Length: 368
Image 1 (cartoon, one colour):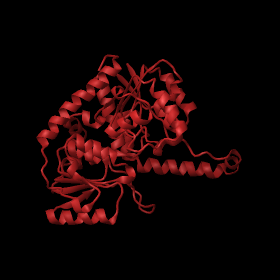
Image 2 (cartoon, helix red, strand yellow):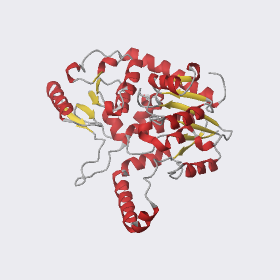
Image 3 (cartoon, rainbow, N blue to C red):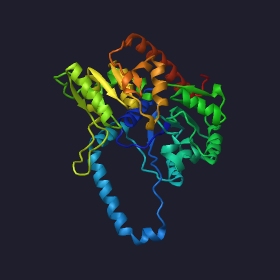
C-alpha cells in the first residue's frame, strides 16, 4: 500500500523529525511504501500591488532567508534526506495540496504531533483533517494526532468544518487523553470511535535509536543533559545548583541557533539522541525530550511549559506513573525520587502492542 503521511511541517525540531522517522519506519516494517506530504504553513498574504512594487525587495529577502535556513539546517537536512525521503514538494495552499493526489496514494495517515493545534495552523488546520480529498474515496486515518492542549481553540466555523471532515475518517487516534475529550465534547465524535495511542517515537526499540548514533563518539565524562526550549534565569539557576550538587557538568543542546551575530547550525539529530542516552540525568521542558528520557530509562525532571501546552506532558507521564517528575514550581522538584523502570518498560511494551495493532488493523480494514 502506498501511504502519504501528513504531519507537522519539517522544521529544525528534533521531536518533529523523529516522530516522522518513527512512523515511517513502523509503516515500512508493516510492508507499506511511504511518502511524506510536505504541507507548509500558509504564507503571509501581501496585497498584489504592494508585492509588485516591492518585488525586488521580497525576492532578495526570500533568497537570503533560504540561504540562511540551508546553513542553519545543514545537519537536520542530512537526516531528512537520509531517513525521511521521499518527500513531496512544498505545498502552501489547499489548492497546491491537492496536487499530492497525483502520487496515487492508497491511504493517508494524519499524524503525529500537534497537527490539530489550531494555535499553530489556523487557516490551514482543516487541511490536516483531509479537506483536500473533497470526499474522494480514499482510506484516511489519524494516528496519534495531537491538539497539544486541553482547551478548545477552534473558532465556530473551523469547528464545524473539521467536525464534518472527521466523519470521513476510517479511524481516529490521538496522543493524549485530553485530545480524546476534546473530540467527544466539541467535535461530535463518539467515545468508541477514538483511541489513545503512543507517540510514534515510542513504538521503536532502543536499539533502533542506538543504531542511528552508533558512529557518534561516547562522552568520556559523566554529565547532566539539558534541553530547554524556553530558557529563563529561574530554570538555569536550578540547573546550575543541581549540577553543583551532583558534581557533574552540564551538557546542553539548544533548540535555538543563537542571536543574529553568532548563528550556528542546529546540532545533528544523532548527537541529540546520543547525549540523552549517555546522560546521568536529563532536565528538559520538551515533550520529546521527556519521551526519550523515558525510552532510555534516564532519571529526569520536566519543567512545566504552559505556553506550549501542559496537557501533553500530563497524559504522557500519567501513562507511565511518572507524574511526580513534572512540576511548574521549582520548590517541588525532586529528580532523585524513585524510578521504577521495570514498571515503566512493562507499560511501554503493552502500549506498543496496542498502538501498533490499532494502526495495523485500521490500514487493513480490520476490526480493532
